[in-house]
Length: 344
Image (cartoon, rainbow, N blue to C red; front, side):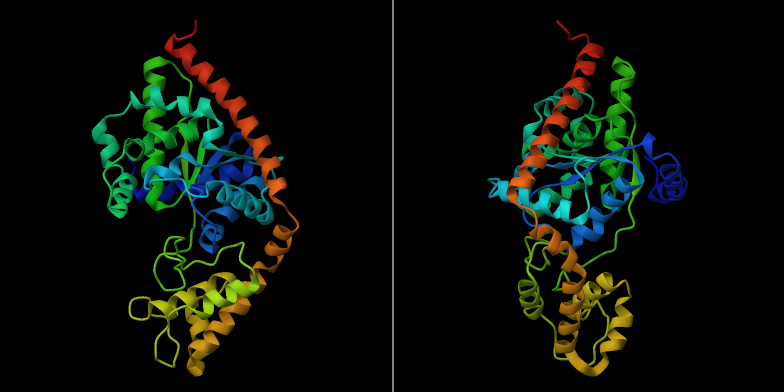
């Protein structure tokens, strides 16, 4: 496995190659639909997907509904989460004529790839995956078969469409390495079928939640893209701060104040330190007003576009995306069966 430094060193050349020949790349990306998408999703992944789509890279976005139950007893209101995510995708600029949006559960042929893929990895390799270890520790539950096989399932997500480019942050690089390993082992054992995808390390800002902790739907510290302006104002009003009047950026000692500063800074394209200096001794109330105005102004156009869409629009996009993904997955599964000598 390459070092993180070696991977980063390749990024300028990879980005230049994408810009020059976007038609050579097929991207697979996505998330688990466990709740409403928030500002962290927008700055972390969604705007990069729009950028890749707009330069001409064929893009697939998976809403991994089966993976919702890796660390919980039920899927909850996954239907609403899926449709809400699609509305946010469309409002942010993803174009369903260029980007295929689909769900795990609607593409049986993709999930069937998991069976041969599991024969290509060892239990020890699955246990070593950082996401498996971290999700297990966070859940406080026993290790399920679904969580243990999560890396192989992600490989199926990427390889069903022969994706050769995967935008990831540092923490998800091991998933791409596992996918490359599975692709390579399959090709060596049965013949050339799959590409070995490259990781595109995204320049993702570390956007904390309103309380300074990691922005998370489960913590209730996120500004959802689908919030109204009033809901946003109320969420920011409730954000914890401290009794010091002079505003400074100090994530360790002043997490609440620093979370607000980071939020204002990312939507204003400034640094938290600049915002802190601007607010100065005006106190937390002034900081909250500034943050509220900045976020609401930033999201105004997104909200207007989202309000013009309906759940029926999202459902139509998903039907088309699922049908296309299933067609591609069927073709890939046929290639896999042929390579393995399992055509009858």
